[in-house]
Length: 225
Image (spheres, rainbow, N blue to C red):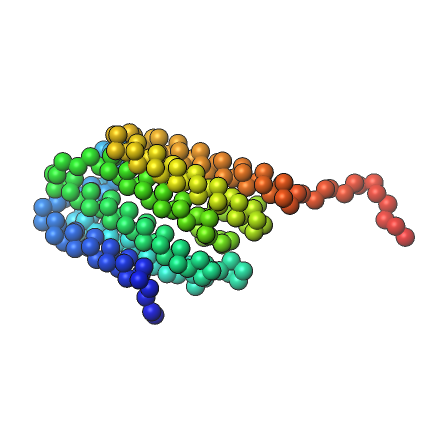
C-alpha cells in the first residue's frame, strides 16, 4: 500500500510518541496517570508497562481507523472524494494527541506543566483546523455533521458544513485564548455542545426551507376510477 505524505507524517507523530514514552519510562511513577477530570486532576491510573503507552497505542488505533474508513465507505458516500482533506484532519488529530501525551508524561515525571491550560489551547487550535476544512467535506457516514437532513440533501450538507466550519473556527480561536488565560474545561464542553445543537437545528431549518416535507394525504379522499 502506497502511503501519502500525510500518512508518513502520522507515522512520524506516532513514532515520536513511542520514543518519548521509552525515553521517560524509567522516571515515570507506577501506576501512571492516564485520565484527568475537568479540573485537570489525575483521577485514573494505569500500571506499567502499559501506562506510558496508552496514548501512543490510541494513536495507532486512530490511524488504523482512518486508513480503514475509506475502504468501507458505501457507494455514493465515498471518503475518497475528499481524501486529501480527510488525511489532513487525521494528521491534526494525531498531532493533538501527541501534544496531550507529551504534556501528560512531563507532568508524570514532575515537570511544572499546566495541563488544563495547554490542552485547552491545543484543542482550540485543533478545532480551528477542523473548522477550516469542514466546508470541503462531501456527504459521508463517518465524519462531519451527519443528521437525517444533511444526509438527505447535498445542498443542506454543504450549507450546514460551511456554517459549522465557521463556528468551529471562531470557537477554536476563542478556546485557544481561553486556555492561555487559564479558563476551565467546563466552558469547552458547553461551547461544543452549543455548536452541535445549533448545527442540528440549522440543518433541519435549511432542509425544510429547501426541500420541504411531503404533506400527509387526507384519509377521506376518494380514489378516482
